[in-house]
Image (cartoon, rainbow, N blue to C red):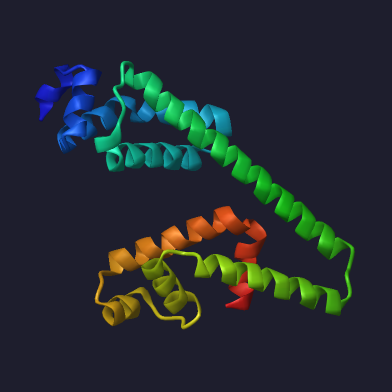
Length: 192
């Protein structure tokens, strides 16, 4: 496997497009740390920076067959990271607005009927977003959150692995977090 150390980036991309996992690993090893540092400088959170880079490489692998002709691999990867960072920052701003509005709502001390109306609206929004999840992901998520089944119980009921169950739940939460924001996710724990 060490022979790939001497292969240039563009050749690695060609190998990657053909499904070569070792070429992918070599690209990952070459660029992972500089990309994490670059991402960290932009967002200031090391764990989130690592996750952004992980998502970039996950996308690179899953879309390997559709990759365009890449002349400069480092530039391509840095652009992918920049786009993920911009999405991250935008998402954090949305979360901050939700949190601020939620805090304002609490501080202003609305009467209980107003709170009930808002809770109902929030629950309807959550239900709509859950209904829009991919079918299997939705089924796993509902079994976990509404029927309170363990990962093992869900895996046995649906005849899938616990790992798949965990991935479906993680994916559902990620989608819901993006669609609804932090406050709605907090509400998930109260309503379900």
